[in-house]
Length: 227
Image (tube, rainbow, N blue to C red):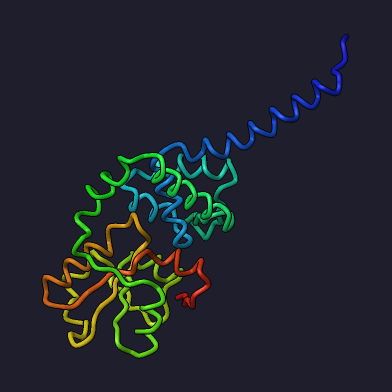
């Protein structure tokens, strides 16, 4: 029986190495799984909550979650009858960010798709992180987290009020009208903050959106709160 030479062994090892990397990349090859990664970048979520966010059945969502878990991109824990998922580590979030940037650089149609989803952003003025920190220190701004409540509980900007976008129209009266409002959500491809700014401005408030979202705020090492 012929034995493998060192070159053959090296080739097999190289093949196995790249196959594992391809397996991880393949787990991200479905749009819904990328959407799940974006959600889990906000914090830990249950299967039921994720299914609601991606508008998929629990069965389909569980299938996507198992694929991501087999690749090592996410991990899980059980609490009674519920299973909660989270990103495996910070590097997974960095991969998601890098993929978005790569897609933006090579796919000119991505900007048009983002515009179709987010709407016209030319009148939705932004505030950068440094400016928001300055306003927060002066007490001259109301910060509103318009993400779903579980994401707020997992982590938020200190002092931010939780008003999920689905509740905003009914809760505008809670906001002071004498200082500007800055709304933030999941990041550049999240519709909640732009929509919130439009709603607030229609109601006569001065409103802006944070230039990106909570994950970018947290990654910059800026202060956060949980609970």
